[in-house]
Image 1 (spheres, one colour):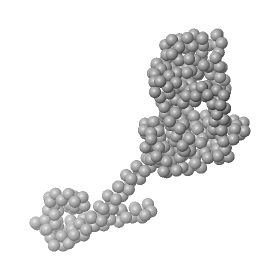
Image 2: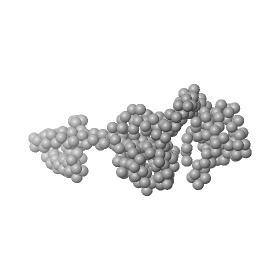
Image 3: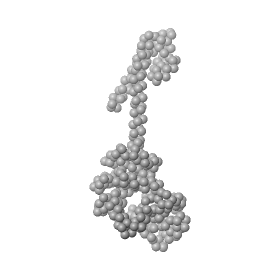
Image 4: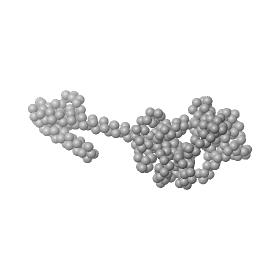
Length: 350
């Protein structure tokens, strides 16, 4: 039923009830034994009848008034049923829109994943394991319940929308996101999608998965910050397993987010303004973090004009500045101490 027809379906019964109330009032007010003396009495009687409360303080006594009241009672049943049905539909529609992410999310400095599959799930597991929040954008309605069954809504938000409607991505807090990960089915689809995204959200940091690593330069030229080739990473790990199996196992372990206290991984932490290491020598920070947290610094990231430069194992004399990132190897049990030092969770929070 259209909105216009619904309006008529409500307005017409209301007008009918007003007419019936007026008729009952005229019929009853002239009878000395009647207790419906005014339009307000008739309105109260009709409302009590409509809601099936039936206080009994007002009721018709004349035969004509009782006949009109029969129409009020019969009409009340249909109108009340329709009203309850409409309220139920409104609640159901509200809950469905909320489930589909229509009302948006208030995440900040979170990570947005566009496109859901088994690979995106593995990425989400790692990001949540690092204590960050994730907004997932999918064009498949079946994904919604599947995702919410695996992750708490305090950590994950799902937006169901058409990928062509990029303006709706605002509901996923994309303007406040730290990084947007594009995970389409093929490289050409990824490329077209990123171009359309940058027309609306030009200032976001984008990471794209590539099947063909030769397209890396093409993506970088349109402003993608990082491209990841599944085949490239896999081939390097396989080669390492062939001639350096222990190194490969260690590398694979370091690539995963540490969850248990016995796990180790490579992390990066942003140096904020009130960090105690601002202005300190890198070597001094190396020694201090090793003593206090049993972590090993691997390098330093300097950012200039949005370009990130990794300084691997800096020599003595390199100073740590606010806005830098420290790269380190840490175990799961060191995360609490590291948070107290850096005052931020691991990961890029630009």
